[in-house]
Length: 318
Image 1: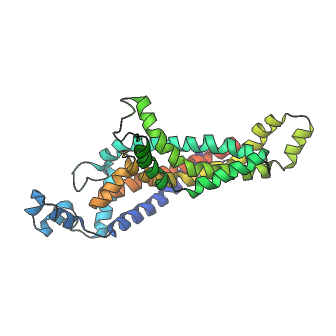
Image 2: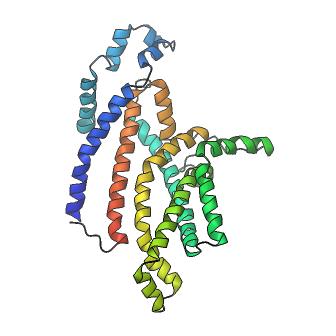
Image 3: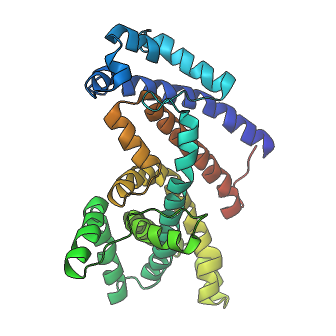
């Protein structure tokens, strides 16, 4: 197991290098120039400097290749993602302040998706071609068809018009008031996990139908094993392997949805930080956010691979 983990971690190094290169170059292709933004923002410090002096002060006068290797060198040898071009604050400090909020939103959305999707998927498979099966499948299609940003906008606008109520927009940290924080994050998490729960439900149903037709399931039932035990202990355990794979694949999708939810519900997480940085062309923050998200996605998929051995005894790591 240890040798397998070491090999997988080493294999991730080229992936992270390639991802960092793509992110660094792509960010520079965003239309607009931060120098023009600074010069047009009536900033006193920017007005006193010429364009060349400002570029030199921000380190943007060097070739992109030199900027990339300087950025990578700072990460490897200093553990630094640079400083914000606008606030002149460390990027790592900004990210570490926002990361727990986005992580909390993502975990809550994932819990919603799994708690709702897996049981309903199992029920739909066991009750195949019944009214309950048709109803659950219809709700899954509806959840997939309704865009999250549209549902979030409706939740913010129409309750305030009809009942004079709207979700709290002043964010309360978990450390300050856990119950109020969870209540505030519940609605965005439900909306964010809506589509994922529908996908999880449909995949669980499909895999359960396939597994329940296997010979060992029929043998267990023929020997008198209780149907509930057969479904939970034998059928569901084997059907969960593709669902676990789906969790790894949905990790970047959850972050993309978190960007939208944080914008709609004014949640000061990494998504809101990213949108503000894109608007200001703050390259270090944009590259830092994408790099952290990329590292998180890579290691989530590593954990998914390691979890296969817990679900399927036939899986061996060498």
